[in-house]
Length: 70
Image (tube, rainbow, N blue to C red; front, side, top):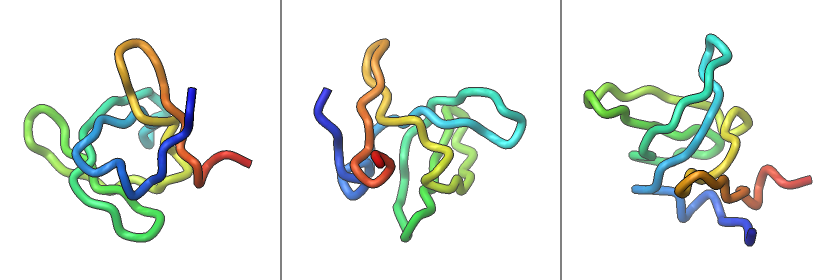
């Protein structure tokens, strides 16, 4: 699958690993440098580092992010 730039993630859903080590899927609200602000279904916002993001979440698929590919 073709990778996506981190600048195009605003308004999209991303899959990431939270502080407890569990996988989450939440919507990106804003991007500042290497930090994403995501919002869950209850409206709570949290900041996550870009290195914990696994990719853009599509239906049962993950789209990789260009800045994370090495």
